Amino acid sequence: MRLDKSNSDLENCLKQANPSDHLGINGETEDQRIKREECINKYEKSIMKNFLFPFISNYLFLTEKWWHRFFVVIYVILMIIVLLISALIFSSVVDENQHNITIKNNLREFSKNSEKTIANTIPLFLNQADKIACFESSKISYLSRYDLETKSICSSDIESNADKIAQSYLKDHTASVDEKKKLILDILAKDSEKRYCFIHNDMKCASDKIISYNRNPLFYLQVFAYSLIVACLFSYILQILYYKGLIYIIYGKKNIGK
Image (cartoon, rainbow, N blue to C red):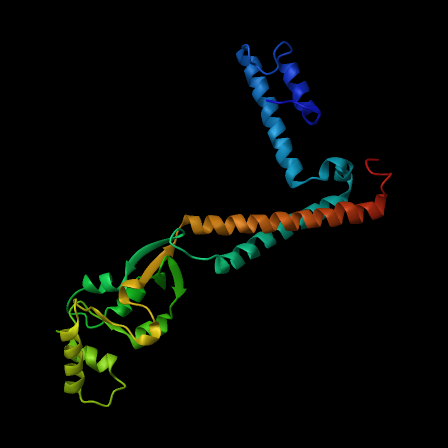
């Protein structure tokens, strides 16, 4: 540990704990070790206090003033409000990506593993999904739940449910029910792999890229970290305005500490 003038309080505390070897390099008793650790812990707390409240050590006399204590209460309330508002804002603007989300399922696999008697699995997929999105190239893009439910259809056995699927997916077509069903079956016949979904072109996302997901702890850690930074910056601004503005006006530079 390097001790300089800025650490003089710590050095004095350590010397009182063990005058002959204040760093405890050449051995120390259990009592000396406990006292040395107490000195270090006290110093670390002092560093954190000075970091968060850089001006407070020069204005300790203000604790006797009722109006100062009133401003401290207002300050604490404001900081809580700022932290909460920042968290709400950042929860909406922090980018969601492959690292801060947990993917529960994708629409294709969900439909593939569903009961064959279910003509449309999309409503079930949406019911079990906290959030949905298009996940391509490690990027998350917004998808409308309403558009997905009203413009697309999925089933584990499209051929067996072709009648219902044709009526639902091709409801805007003027063709007869049989013609719609034939159109669905013709598409299935041309597919190179088994199809489980008909996704409208407006969605601009394949069924295996449509995911249901949750935000994982990393996302909330990011939100908390950004909110804490904003709160700290706001805290410094308040302290500068208070100590270097209001208190300076009241006491003047020469009377500080009296």
